[in-house]
Every structure is written in C-alpha cells, then in structure tokens.
Length: 110
Image 1 (cartoon, one colour):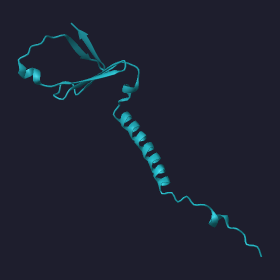
Image 2 (image 1 turned 120 degrees about the vertical axis):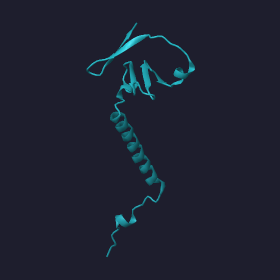
Image 3 (image 1 turned 90 degrees about the vertical axis):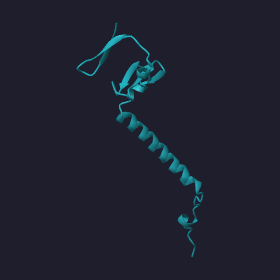
Image 4 (image 1 turned 30 degrees about the vertical axis):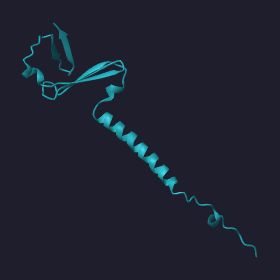
C-alpha cells in the first residue's frame, strides 16, 4: 500500500511574525485616510482643496475672531488680538461689510 502525501500537512507555513505587522500597517493607513476625509467633509473645509480664491471669517465680532484667506497657493491666517484697544493706536475706517440673506458677505471699500 502506497502512502499518499498529504499536501496540507506538508505545506510550507509562513512563520514570519513580521508579515502580520505589514497587514496591520496597511489597515492603519486606510483608517487614517478615511478619518482625514471624514473630518474635512464634517467641518466643511473642502474649499481648501479647490483652485478658487476665498476668505473665511470664523467667529465674526468675537474676541477669538479669525480670518483665513487663500490666494492662489498661499493660505494666510489672521487671528485678532485685542492689543489695539489698549495701545492707544488709532485707525481709520476703510470700508463696510454687508451680509446678504444667503449668508454671503460683501465688502465695500470707502
């Protein structure tokens, strides 16, 4: 009687413990990309990835007001500080901003 070779028992098993770490790294990368996409869409920051120029005013009229402007590839961010009030510096009015019913803000220079 001939013995049959059982290919399942004689197969080479990959005993490298690092091979499972590579798979975990791939899963972590997919999770990180999905998390970034979810955060960008959740906070409506998709404008940062367009070619259009824009200006965003966060918390208008409050102490922590912030103005974010994108012109071409350059993004500038201005945070208001209340140092102008106490420094005795004086300024001049340079224009007026109007908010329309649809939420759009129009700046009219004087």
